[in-house]
Length: 340
Ligand SMILES: Nc1nc2c(ncn2[C@@H]2O[C@H](COP(=O)(O)OP(=O)(O)OP(=O)(O)O)[C@@H](O)[C@H]2O)c(=O)[nH]1
Image (cartoon, rainbow, N blue to C red; front, side, top):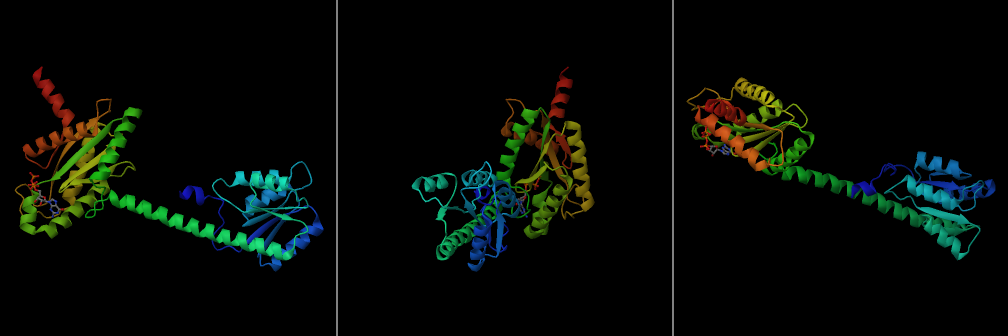
């Protein structure tokens, strides 16, 4: 929506009102320029034929164009109006045709070519002033509309962000996670690149809450979120709050070995932060366990299968003593080797 209105051709909002006057006869041009200034136009840009008119239009972005139909050279005013319209896709600078011709067909051709109004020469000052007033009014309304559209666009963007944001931690929430994981699976399938999903769960967090209280629990969750944001250094890495004290990391273009290095860095950084755990049988500071799955997605890969695999690996990490990361695929490889 904003794209169509707020095009690059829109003049800056606080610029004085300007008119581009395209007229080949110097005496008529001087007279009209004078009348325009008397009518309150701050800047009158003057051109005598097609090329300088288009150059000025591109460069100075006038608010209104007064355009003579008959111009010297090969191009007439209709042609100039069409080029002007092409130069501002989505934008709309009012164009008023000027001509000694007053046939109905000329009016028709002028409007067809992209004109908004038509003035027959010699132009009466009072008529010129009235048309300008009308165009200025339209111009002001359009500016207001552009501003409102911009505001609406910003508000919509903010709303979209809020819909996918977890309020406690500021991380992407479950809804955002679902969307992004789906997108990244499609991208990795297309590009044949490895995608890693890591589910992390804080260890003995119930005991944390029970001993320190929920408010301190929330503080700890925010600190964990900060750590996750810090380790997600690549632009497409995403840290999300999957639910409660569970977090999910989506790491595009990350093979198994890279995922393990990442997990070690994450566990190490969380320990360095040293969030005191008041009642953990494992460690004096908060720790987490993680389940990892890595694959180059194919037609059978879905968000559900990836989450199930990461969850299974997480369950194994918890069962084996917590404060560790397990990879679903590495576990599978080990099982396969044992079978042989
Ligand atoms: N403070 C706080 N606590 C939360 C929030 N969401 C979930 N929790 C708590 O996280 C705890 C999760 O407990 P469990 O699922 O039993 O897991 P755990 O105690 O961490 O045990 P393991 O995962 O087996 O190590 C519960 O006490 C929840 O109340 C939250 O937003 N804030």
